[in-house]
Length: 212
Image 1 (cartoon, rainbow, N blue to C red):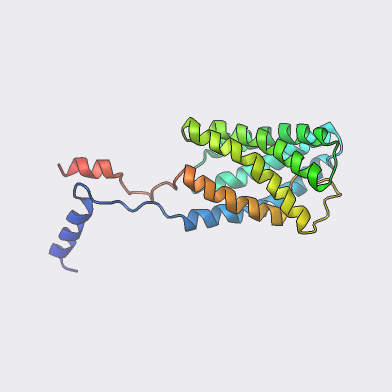
Image 2: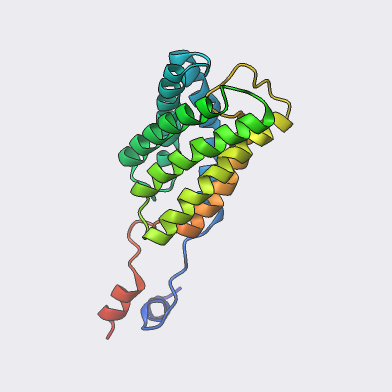
């Protein structure tokens, strides 16, 4: 490509009204979904610290540790869309309180219905805490907060249907539930927060202003 052709291409791409490609879906979604691997690790960490979820203390501290690991992984796999430290803290606190109240509400039961309810309560507190630090307007924050109880309950349901032994009273659902949760929540996150532009890419309104 000669110099004139390069100049013409540059002019066409930056003239007023030129379209700037929107961030893609697949790559940030795949990265976020791959974060499901953190869920089994988070469960092991929570169980290692607090043991089985069979008491208020175990549920609270197990949830805090599990939430901290999951929150860290989600922050790191969010394609720079989430504030890492605040997301970590919100996830840890939300899951700690949610697991405490959810586990107590079902008497630490591990039936399908009991874990679905526990998951919904956990997701309610988790989603609300995360929504507070989600970099979006109040409506999108509300959507995230309302979706988490459903997705967290679904995670436990998929885990049980997959035949995973839940009698050990883990703090979080297994890998099958985690990949389901991550895939669906990743699609939702993309709808609520587009991936950030690549470094050096300027917004369209700035490009338009320069060429007036």
